[in-house]
Structures are given as C-alpha cells and as structure tokens.
Length: 215
Ligand SMILES: CC(C)(COP(=O)(O)OP(=O)(O)OC[C@H]1O[C@@H](n2cnc3c(N)ncnc32)[C@H](O)[C@@H]1OP(=O)(O)O)[C@@H](O)C(=O)NCCC(=O)NCCS
Image 1 (spheres, rainbow, N blue to C red):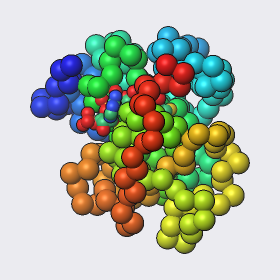
Image 2 (image 1 turned 90 degrees about the vertical axis):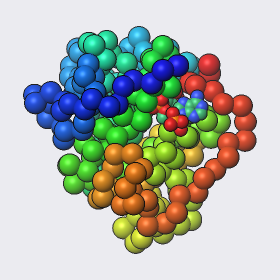
Image 3 (image 1 turned 120 degrees about the vertical axis):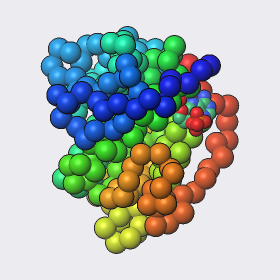
Image 4 (image 1 turned 180 degrees about the vertical axis):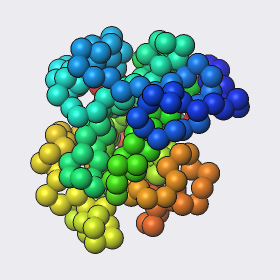
C-alpha cells in the first residue's frame, strides 16, 4: 500500500497547542476533548477486542490527553497519553484505523506523542506492548524504545527501570514494558541523538503477528 506523501512539508495548524512537527498537506494533529473523544470509538473498535476494547474505551473517556491524526478531516489514528509523574510519560494506547495502516501514521502518532511529552518536560516515556504484537513492537522499536528489564536500575539512575511506577501502568500478562529516554530529537531515527544511551534490545517476537488484540 502506498505511503502518505512525506515530501511537501507544511506546519501543523497554528491552533494546535503541541509542538510543530512537519506534516504533508492534508494531515493534521488535534487534541480531542470531552464528547469529541467519541470520534475515536469506531477505529478503537477496529483495533481492539475483549478486555482491551473495554479498557481502551474507559481510558479514552478518563485519560488526560487524547491526540488524533486526521487525513483530509478523516480521523485515521489516536494516542491516549498520560503522565505518571511530571517527568514520566506513558502511552496507554496507540491505534490506527484498519484501512489506514502501513502508511506511516502510527509512526507519526508516536512521534507526536514523544514531542508532546518532551515539550512538557517529560524525561522518560513508557508503553506496555503485547509480546506477540509484531506491528506494535516494531513501531516502538523504530522510535528507539526497548524492553525494560524487571531488575534494571531506575530511569533516574541511568537505566530504564520503572520502580514504583508499574502499578500505574495496567500491565497484564503477555505484555512487555517498553521505554525510552527523551531529551534529544524525537522524530524518526535519522539523528544520532535519538539513539539511547544504552543500545535498544531488538527482540524477535515468538509468535504470529497480530494487528490488534484478539484480531
Ligand atoms: C500498531 C499500529 C498502531 C501500527 O500503525 P501503522 O500506521 O500501521 O504503523 P506505520 O505504518 O506507521 O509503521 C511504522 C513502523 O511500525 C512497524 N510496523 C507497522 N505495522 C507492521 C506490520 N504489520 N508488520 C511489521 N511491522 C510493522 C514497522 O517498523 C513500520 O515501519 P516501516 O513502515 O518503515 O517498516 C497498528 O497496526 C494498529 O493500530 N494496531 C492495532 C492496535 C494496536 O495493537 N496498538 C498497539 C498497542 S496499544
């Protein structure tokens, strides 16, 4: 499937409160507030089933920040973002409508989430990733995330350990905690500053890839 054009760059809407990422014409980020968040439900339902669908819908209503990406005013993907502390960000959910996958939108959404975090002073970002969800693992790895080991030093001591924070993350069986530090450029991997101080662990998922939970 053809990817969205990336060549003719424009700035996102000046009304958007977030930092400006370069975007091709027709694409824009926006924050969904209150009842506007219901716009995300159709693609959320395409992306998750069972417990995850229930939990993602509940999180959609309750979470601090919902960022959405529109292409020609069609909502193509969403991130649900929270701060666990003023300097620790958490990507609760990231999903792209089925018809819009493999066009770079998931990567743009993650870049936007990291830019939002970085602009707000966040130093480290985490996400729980299903160990069998190859698209999700590959996406987070492509943006410099790596698996966080249970025993490693805390992020403030030079590791990525999330001591005292895991209980806020709703990590369930079959999920891995992924993390990365922020502070340098966050868009893509072209800049050496995006490489972590520690090399990311490139993990080969053990099982068949799936797009969503229960697909
Ligand atoms: C995971 C998900 C968000 C990816 O969105 P997407 O828009 O298709 O991702 P992108 O096109 O931006 O791809 C970015 C990178 O992710 C990886 N990736 C995405 N889909 C992939 C797939 N099906 N197989 C392997 N790698 C994949 C690749 O590394 C890709 O980079 P590349 O295109 O340069 O190879 C999407 O598949 C989705 O919504 N899945 C259901 C919900 C979900 O599982 N969310 C994650 C956990 S909350």
